Length: 77
Image (cartoon, rainbow, N blue to C red):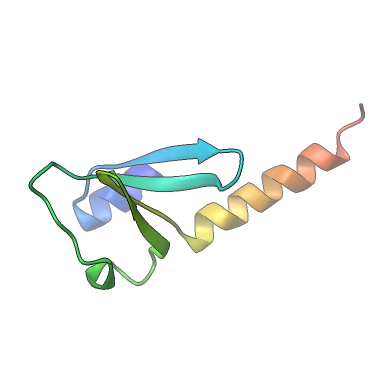
């Protein structure tokens, strides 16, 4: 999913995860690269710049993460 998104927009995207945000997409920037978050595609949601990267999510990623959480809650202990 992330690979196809990166190919679609010709960007080197990768998947990230942390306990607070869950899954997210990460675009790593070179030291001399600067990006205006307003110029990102509209499907890149909640975009924030963190150090030398831009992190964001998409509707698809949120949907898949929510399905994963729901399935985990249904598993017997």
